[in-house]
Amino acid sequence: MRRRDLLVLGSAAFAYPSVAFAQMPDRVRRVGVLATFEAGDPQGEILIERLRSGLKTYGWTEGNNLHIELRYTGPNPARLEPLAAELARASVELIVTHGTPAAYAMKKAAANLPIVLATVGDPVGAGLAESLARPGGNITGFSLIASDLSRKRLEILKEAVPRASRVALLSNPRNASLVLQVKEAEAAAQIIGLELQLLPVQDVRDLEPSIKAAAEGRANAIITTSDNIQVIQRAQIVNLAMGYQIPVIAEYREIAEAGALLSYGPSRQDSWLRAAAYVDKILDGAKAADLPIEQPSKFELVINLKSARNLSLEISPYLLSRADEVIE
Image 1 (tube, one colour):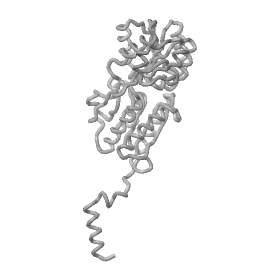
Image 2 (cartoon, one colour):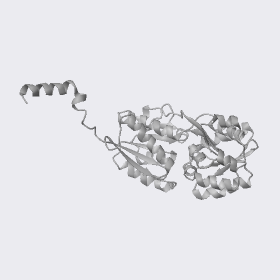
Image 3 (cartoon, one colour):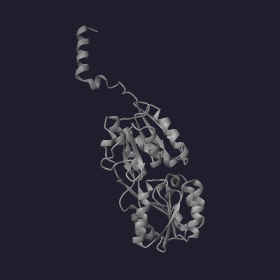
Image 4 (cartoon, one colour):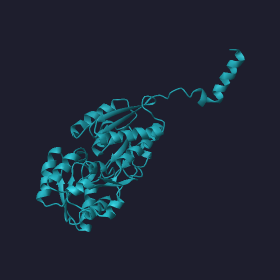
């Protein structure tokens, strides 16, 4: 090649850098994920895939410019702190967490690392953020709390089970994010005219005696919350309740898919998809403290007609017409 051709090629590279360096890969960025479901849980893996899908839309792909360090705790809270410490040592730039306990563990293990809450109940009530608008510290993300959600769920319950006068609420007093949810449920039940029976579930071993207590207390329905134990053990909860012919009303669609009568609440899949935007912003240099914690934008009503038939319940056509999905 002549010297003149070399000069022309060199000048073109400076004039059009995006073309000249288009094939040069970016440095690999490292993101950690602390998930409180089990590895291989189909519903949990869908959430991880939503995060991956969202990141791809911002140009982040594994094997190219992104590496994701995944840790799964399952229903065992004793694994939270050791796995959080592992991630803190894994040279990641930020952490995506699932659930309030995971956020606590990660905040303790890595006080200076940005943390994106993909799903959390009440981050302000749990002391993870100063406010939704200005979270402060190193935490931001997406809350699953929305105003009047507990009341709407109880109203739907009354439509589906008109005879209901007493309902049992499974809660976990150790989960700070549930404090607001329980208070709202108590207030809503009083307005609607329902008697609320609170049943603490702090461990998997508490499930069977709690559901037995609901049956002995003549509860007409059992309501599950967003606590991790209840989501992971959704099939066990439904099977135990169905043994007493008690319908289960849930917050997440995964529990309706496992056999609950219905679910009404925010879409966790949508939350994980949206979390990708915050991961992208932080990798681009944004500070977690400057990104407001967002509330749910998508809600789903899922009705399981198979369970309704097993419970000898007839769901009104009007309620069915409002469902986002009907499971036959």
